[in-house]
Length: 84
Image (tube, rainbow, N blue to C red; front, side, top):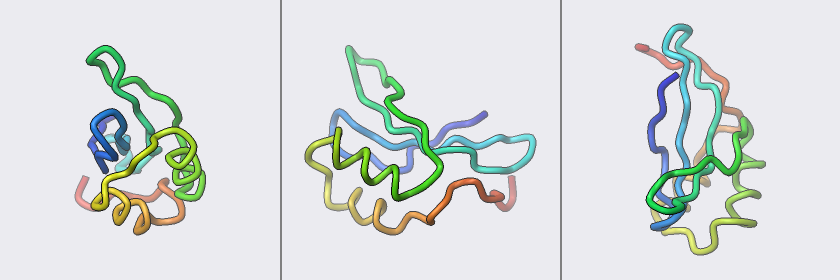
């Protein structure tokens, strides 16, 4: 599994995207919180609707650039990654 930062919501919250390198499929979005200098997983989801609801509930202020990224996410995450 690999993980890339999809959006830095604010200094304490971010969204990462996990991918399975062997199959080339995106597996899930992770909502993560910075605690004591370490990123901790809060939730792992596959739908953008659920991710946005969790961000609203937990993350507080969301940077404007991150809000644009959140609004543009595809409905589901489990799609093939081209070129992987």
